[in-house]
Length: 316
Image (cartoon, rainbow, N blue to C red):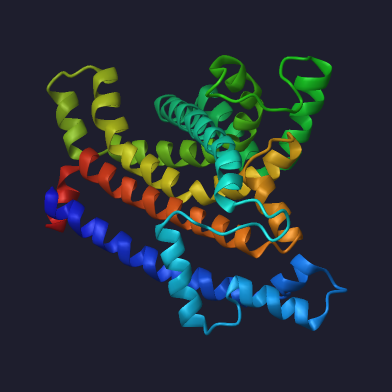
């Protein structure tokens, strides 16, 4: 197990270094000039040159990169060219909102998707499977922004079951905070739930037709025990894979969802920084998302080895 984890950590570290190089170079290829964004269009060439010198933009790219890495290791992500606020403060104020939203959406998607996937496999050819497949079709076909608008119109405005917008800090008031996040999380998690449902159903149908399941039935094991001990457990690898791969979809979907429900999260910060060409913030946002992807993939690899030890043994 230690060797397996060491290998995965080494691969993650190499990926992070390469990603930092790509992000650093890519940000500097974007159109526009940070100095002009800070000083304005009417600034003189001398003022622009002074700003570039202060930001280190007049240095060669390798020098700028290692300077960036040095500040990064010290926890310094720079300052916003638009407001002058440290980027770490902006991330600290917005990232928790998106993390709570994404975590809530994942819980909703996994619970609903796995439950309906089991129902669809258990009642094949009957009305519960048709209802589950109908939910999957809607979740995969209808855009999240349209579902969000419908949810606000009917569930928030007409029925008053949920707030139409706003945010309450979950850490300060968990009950009210989760209440405000329920509707956005359900909308954000609907598409992922549909994918999990379809894959869980397909995986369980395949598993339930294997020889060892037929042997378990021949030994007299109950249908429920076989379903959950053999069918569902072997389908969890598919669920873990989907959750890991769809994390990017949740983050990009959160941008739209946060706009619809007026949440002060990571998505709003991303859009604002792109529209105002706030390059330090864009660089930090992309870096944080990249680190998130790497950590999620590492966690998925570890969960693989826990769910199915043969993966861990086979990689040694």
